[in-house]
Image 1: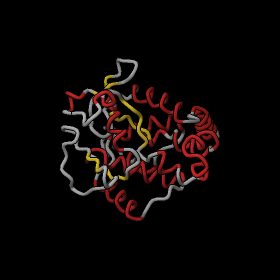
Image 2: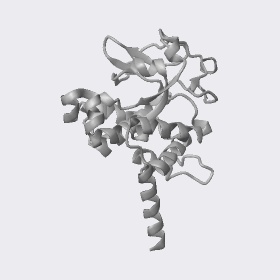
Image 3: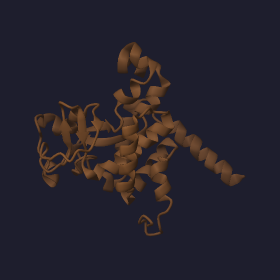
Length: 239
């Protein structure tokens, strides 16, 4: 009984700390990532993040990143929704009545999705802006838009081929949002993410991030946690 009560109290405390909106979630994310030194790299390009300034900055030289067109925006870190706000927002009635602003003002469901830390990652500002609300895809496109970063944005076709390093985490974020918030996904997207989830498995870094988020938000991404629970004592993922 005491153990159960302790678990309940922890969950209540964590849920009480959960962000109510995207602005609060960004503040939580900054604290969370600052506590995870090994996670201080940009999500898509893997650039080290300099957090010594008030506004975090990516270290281009460490990862070979080159701005495509907007060096000023590429000089800052932005918090990216892996599943874009447009994608989950336009499935709600509030979006039809006034877009993102209306949803922020009137929809608890939208704000829960927008503030979910499992769906928030640090990205180079220009890459975040270029990705926009385009769908992820894979078509063996040659990279080079951003120097050594393998992100490819096809603006005409409105699609993005992410680097291999990010594909597994992208897939697990989408599958989590689909299950948690009944997010509608096209069958082709579901097949792609299921394939990426298998092809690019959870690693130690992803487990640490998931546990840290659960400590603040009160829930895990089951697609990550189910693998993390099979870890051995050394922290390596069990085969």
